[in-house]
Image (cartoon, rainbow, N blue to C red; front, top):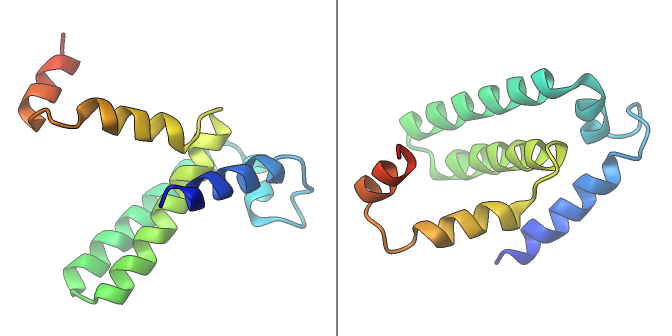
Length: 105
C-alpha cells in the first residue's frame, strides 16, 4: 500500500525542478512554506467539514487532498513518507497515553 506514497514522493521531488507556471506543486514550493501550510490548513478544515457531513466519498476525497499536501510539506522539508511510517512503526503497540508521556521527557 505504501508504494503509491513512494511514487508520489518521487514525483514531488521532481516537481522541485520544474517551472512554477507548469506545475501546481512547483508553484507551492516557489511560494514557500507559508503557502504550503495554508493549503494544509484549508484541506484539514475541508476534511473536518466532510466528516461532519457524513458523506464517505467526500471524506475520502478531502483526506486524499490533506495527505497530498502533507506530502508536499514533507518533501519541502527534505522528508518523505518513510520517515512518518517509521514513526508510526515506533509507536505501534504503545498505548497513546504511553507514547505521549514519552514525548514529554
